[in-house]
Length: 227
Image (cartoon, rainbow, N blue to C red; front, side, top):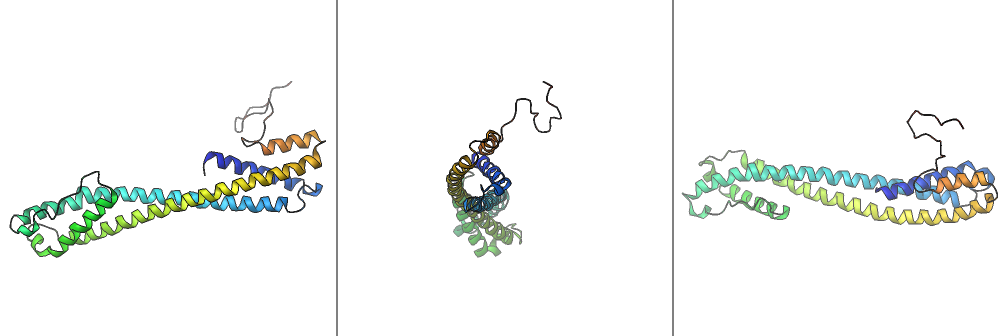
């Protein structure tokens, strides 16, 4: 959740708390407070979904980068060296194990890796005689599968994050509209009570509750100076 949406949600929670505290004065009567509570709950769920999507996408991207390095600097490099040696005796292996450029897209890399894996499986016996480890084909197959899974997980995480973010913005717009209605109700009930209206204005302040001039910062341990 970005900072703007987070501040707006925190403001909505303060408004909810104000209305709860004055429910006996009829401010919370009707559907106004209940609707606001429902919207806040929905926003919190969407915020959690958004954070989960970001975490999934980030973890998948980190794994993808790790697998790219493993494929490019170890597995495919090793297979190319063996393939070039084997091609000196078998012309059908010439140019069958060409590496993609280091800056190749993920899709280009996975296609090249799949192609080299297919050739390695097809000509496994010949490659074994030229120094290929028996475990290389399985290791390459595992890495290709994991790389494809990481790509899909990253896409899924981004879709979840983007979708939750769009829904969250829509919910926050509805919350803002609902608070305007509640603002009218509070002004109608308490407009002639400056102290309560001050508390209400502080609750509705998007940047946070108002501070008095001598009020210390949280955690500062200082006390206001005597007048």
